[in-house]
Image (cartoon, rainbow over all chains, first blue to last red):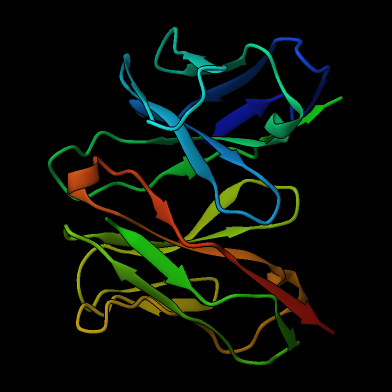
Length: 116
Length: 113
């Protein structure tokens, strides 16, 4: 089945130690998103890629970076995790529907990040 | 700007009860509307969607109708099961916002046997 895959499902890192989260997709969608979701809150968009075009949300901290080496993969890099970065990180994809009706976003299962 | 307001939870129900979760929206463009469900420890799953006025989305016994006149997209299910216990998010996206999802705060639903 076509899907969005996130690895690992659980990640533990130390305060200040860089960490990378991974997302891959078999849907061949050209738009990919990263969200941060804290407990009992709605997901918050960090950034998205439209093909290789990177789009940062205005309030995303500089501590968060992303890479998309090809259509299938996208990485979230947290350069110096703080205790406040502990959260669930969700990857999502959608098809290019620019100029037409917005298309559905399909989410991965998420990576839960713990910062010690 | 665009926004989504949904009823606060938790909503606690007995099995086989009727469920309604209210959702209203404001949008400058012409939005598509979505309901996503999140089971404990999991990502979001699309439950249903509607892309134009009077459309009814349905899936797994859940339904929601896109009401432009009342700017609403209320979620309903006639007979809930314990397995429906989850957090439900109402969301919208518009062509003006390239498909960016604007979420409501989420409503936790707890169904007891």
